Image (cartoon, rainbow, N blue to C red; front, side):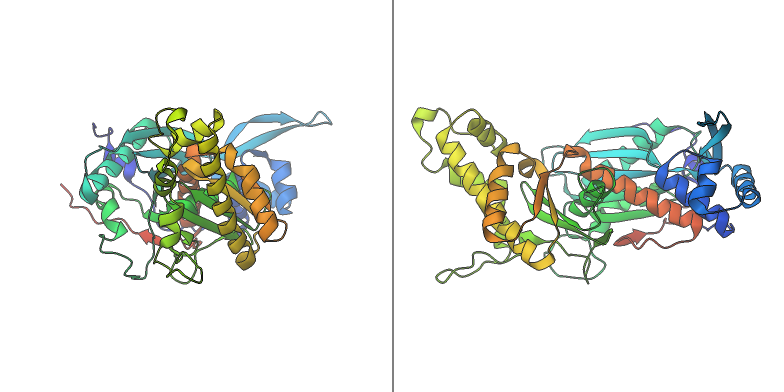
Length: 408
């Protein structure tokens, strides 16, 4: 991909907090969380006097952090100026490193999408160096699509399909997650956040999806792998090591005559294992066997009795897993996502199983589809970018500061 024009100016960003009074900082927080709003509405929300509000707006406007977005006529016929975040507030980028592609979304700090890019991951084994280069290319493409007028890039958050922790857990011999963003760090003068993909999807549900009005819930991703994101009191719960929600790593099976295997839950509940079980004894009368879990669900929807049996069995297994989690964290709401989890055939039998094994818990399907993870990553990056302006810590799992680049 071609380098974006004037890259150095585009990638420059101030990582030092601005010396703003609390009134101005409060205005920025409201505009970032709620979008455009009139000055009287801002004053009412923040309980600020007209002179204090005027001073805050004037200061932020002079810095380019706030700008006018037109006017609004109220019910009494009075016209009030509408304000929004200015271009100098900059933007953030969220990246989702998926199984088949790397996608990125660039958003303003108040959530307006500026650009979206995507590149497929080559089918051959590209390794961590190849993924690192692809992530850097996708981000550069997003920066180029945003253009030069939007202000500085404040932060990039990369969602990875693996445990992301600042502590050594010795889970496997793979290279650390930092290697997947190595190329990106040399190309940016912005911090890079690394976060687990399921955690990012959970943040998207909290911000944009099925859990917008909930402060406590769980998001269960069911696909090739199994993972859970946990939100407690409006905050992502990461656990002591940053690895909370790794339900796929639970030992399984539990029974009187079987020895539990490490990470057995994921081995049993993953879509590959589901497909293998369904192919055993596939009736010739029902035509060619499915080549993927997606085809298995399609066959079930089309009326295949054999496929419907295995989809029902899988739903019952997922429901049992959820019932166990309900007994531990009592989330009140569980959102099903992932390539398998969001299939509508699962919802009813999962609900029945949870009802039979645990107390009443609302279970719904995510409506964000494949965009949930990248939206959550973008929100995480925007929140951290705002925190940099305000000098407020946001405590992501792993924050990698910009690497010093050699000057030409």
